[in-house]
Image 1 (spheres, rainbow over the protein chains, first blue to last red):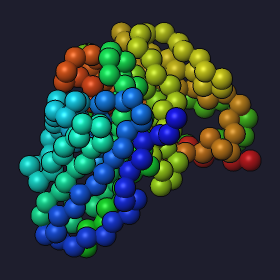
Image 2 (image 1 turned 180 degrees about the vertical axis):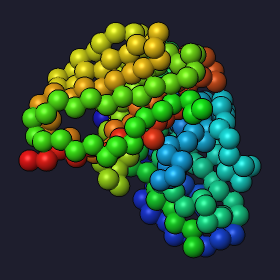
Image 3 (image 1 turned 60 degrees about the vertical axis):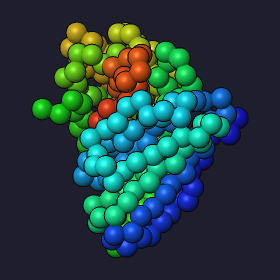
Image 4 (image 1 turned 45 degrees about the horizontal axis):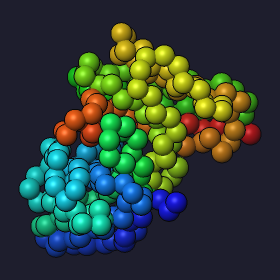
Length: 113
Length: 114
């Protein structure tokens, strides 16, 4: 079974621009979560989507948004990029139900100049 | 106080050593506990998943959870150079619509020397 895939793997943007990242979960997984990883803050939860609905949101500004499609694929968008948004953005998928094993993709490394 | 505390290391051991990695937490609602391994410039890989207090073994890896002390551990036996990576503990409150988010420790950088 293929794992979680994320595109693109690397992105370089300038301040003020916006960016869209994509995630395809493991086949059969209906929940997708996004995390930001930085050297200073570690891994931090951004939001979770299940059946095209945002179920939980972390403590990030409104510039960070996401959505999920009917095939469970998800996108996240960051508008008005700031230097501090430079990070590894990770997507994780989970099969629905009570278990909480989350499987991560390779991430998208975003650099904001 | 951070919800999850993990010694960042770095930790350097000789090949074949037993490695002990630990995390403490403050949120008594946490019920699901995971250990991830992350190689440089890769995504985290799920190693161990536990729900209850006690031990769980998988090959050279043993995960231990002590909910009364709010303390979890990962033991690696017969460590190999290929185990060199950052190890992250993660936990969540449990089932229910808003409780699946993972709270991570900062990670411990482990180097196993041949």
